[in-house]
Image (cartoon, rainbow over all chains, first blue to last red; front, side):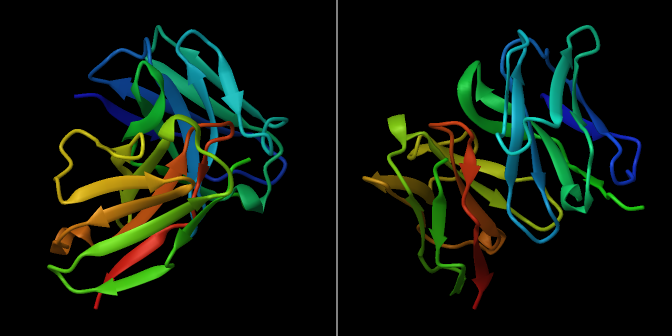
Length: 119
Length: 108
């Protein structure tokens, strides 16, 4: 079955760029909507944005100026870049796949990766 | 942006009891594009319900969703030990998709 795995370089310093990759195994990244969602410790979920495999994107308005989501179909991966981070960006970051090849809620999620923004 | 307000914040119940969780939207959720998720500590959310009342694959039929206008309800007919968790609603009818703040179902 399809599995997602987030990966990233670890802690990030304030003002730097957070970069995460989501590797898709057990299925193709073609079709479906691929999302990034985050969750600060002990708090609720926040949708960051999505990319459709063809390349169209949609971002949360509050993050739009700092976010880029891209897809690499040759590697079966998609990525998140969040620029100019602050402590408020500290969270568990999840990648997720939509239920179907149409706009729909995520039904397959990665395990999540903790990103800490700290000097 | 559509704001989702979940109530109660915490629900204290015993195994075998019925759980009723509420999610109220600040405006109409077109096409009933509302989902429910279950999240346990240290785990990713798990999709339970989509389109307000459709169970996701593999979800037991003790979980059901319903809607009435801008009010949405998740019902767990008889709580099993594994059902004690935090539950979130999410609307995906309009951008940005938004989540409620969550309802914790704890063992009484």
